[in-house]
Image (cartoon, one colour):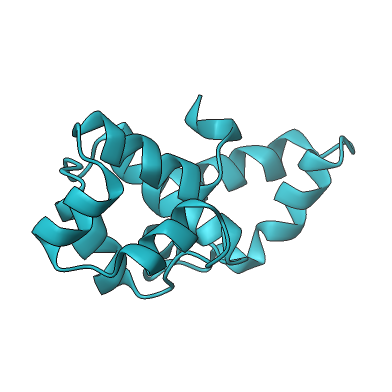
Length: 124
């Protein structure tokens, strides 16, 4: 379900899962309801700051390292045209992106290059 969602819809789903109205959630967490409403409706882009995303994740009670955690950060990164920070930490992943792009386009990638990309993505 989350794979086809945009960041704002996922944010809203998580808030609703807490049984909080927009106004309740914002009041309890000292957030601006107008800005959160725009965020949930996709009128504001997701924050780019890791700190702000972690703050929102904490307020939404997302457990660090859970599927929802990764989905939350992946959707934010994808929507702002970035590679998730945890994939970039200390790695030369940008060298492997052309192989990944060819794969997405359905072009043939030599097995050894594909295996190398998988190892790189896994951090091996």
